[in-house]
Length: 428
Ligand code: GDP
Ligand code: IMO
Ligand code: MG
Image (cartoon, rainbow, N blue to C red; front, side, top):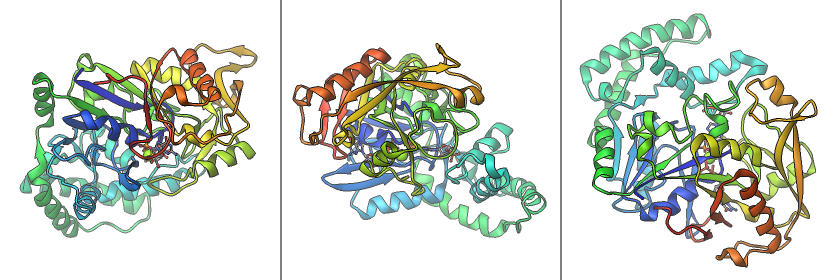
């Protein structure tokens, strides 16, 4: 089974980095297909932490190709900083490939991301301020600058001039901000272009050729279903398609080529930024989840909102992405709870729902239906076989599989690569 996709099933930070790193042991190619440096994927090997924003989580394996696909918006400064940091730690970055069609995140994108949020006031999205929304906005508006433009000195100078002229008017008139300097930006980005040039190629053909040659390709989703611009809690979402179908547009690989979809499911729920979160616990239980799980953002350091596992959301993610197996993460964070709750459905004005409400007004009003489980009250981080997990933990997981109709594939009981229980050996 050569094409496997890993996708977030909740609101992000489920532990996709850990699961991708684990599965990447068997992969020839690991691919990011959407999002940008708003992602923060942590991989831990032998107690050493690697925080990745743009580079695929396969980077720790020598010889693995790490592709940044056309659907990603790339901040060259962040990418080069990440590559330098990896090189300093002895990691080989020669396997990186950057799509010539990917869009470039420019300094005005990140700046306007922040200024735009300020302007929205109380209805701000709570973005990561990495320029993601503004970069995708320019892409859709057909004024964006692509990596192939960045590689062409003349074309880049022309496109930057056109863009910056308009952005500076916007900056000055709308945001009352001083204009950005053309010459400085041109020089800075020409430098990035030269450093990135050796890695740039047509990743669409590279990926399709790899699949045709029987190579194992692993797709790494960033963000998650509930942050998808179509399926999430719009407008409190990101600007791309984290669902598995995103590979069609973001990597140039047809959905029919995908063999297996792994949905990463955190054993409870978190959300950073604004927007509805039906199982949020603004109480002692939520506080305990935050402290036990050290739930503070990788990219921004913000405290994450916390709540009980929402199986209704996971089931929805399963339908949208065609998830075949769940990879449950952070089960160990629940080690010390007397009682654990799981939401199995939503009620709206007394009626059980069969859909995910599009209207945020409705979603804000839904009542989660909870089932309560007995905690296992014992550390599980050293367990390596499913049958050796405490019975209470298995009951919890098996009920999740039942409610969602999705099989358990992996259970993660710690951040380290080896703290992983495998139920399905043949994911590739
Ligand atoms: P991602 O954005 O989906 O890749 O997730 P993040 O990396 O932002 O957040 C997940 C955090 O949980 C990271 O710090 C991981 O190292 C850590 N992690 C992953 N799996 C486990 C696990 O099973 N147990 C514990 N305790 N930590 C985990
Ligand atoms: P990973 O890949 C969690 C959230 C932001 C905000 C909304 C829009 O690590 O799971 P954006 O900067 O994308 O315009 O912000 O999406 N968000 C994430 N939340 N994990 C992420 O990535 C996220 N990327 C964006 O907090 O609510
Ligand atoms: Mg993250």
